[in-house]
Amino acid sequence: MLGIGLGGFFDGIVLHQIFQTHAMLSAIIPMDSMSNMKVNMLADGLFHALMWVATLAGVALLWRALKGRRGAMTSGWRLIGYMLAGWGWFNLVEGLIDHHLLSLHHVVEALGPSMWDWLFLASGAVLILLGHGIASKAGRAA
Image 1 (cartoon, rainbow, N blue to C red):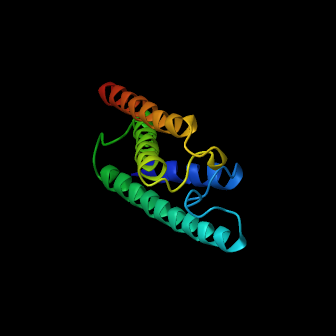
Image 2: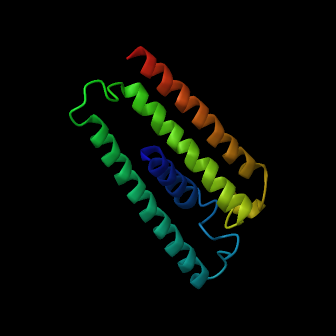
Image 3: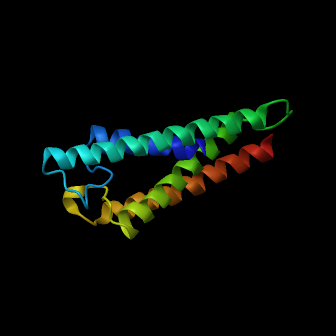
């Protein structure tokens, strides 16, 4: 859950705000007028609020897992692995739903559906595999 929230924040902050490659609804509500930009900004804000809830839930789950338990997630590498896997799940699910199924936006909106959408999905799969690999290796070492 923590990785999902942090992955969502990365997507929203880096892709939506810093690089401005797309907004949450930019494929169906183009950013060609002030009113459309306001709708997209509201959608991005609601998305960030949801990612905030996911991050808080992840922190609460982590705290509950650690509270009073010996050996529960004592490895920092295990935590990093699960966070990477969560980020990967965010990329995979968000990419499938928003980029491919609903076409709400694309990684680089100016290009429409493109290889960048597929690379975003691939990054999700790589992060999931890498994260689970790190977490399981750290779990065996603990």
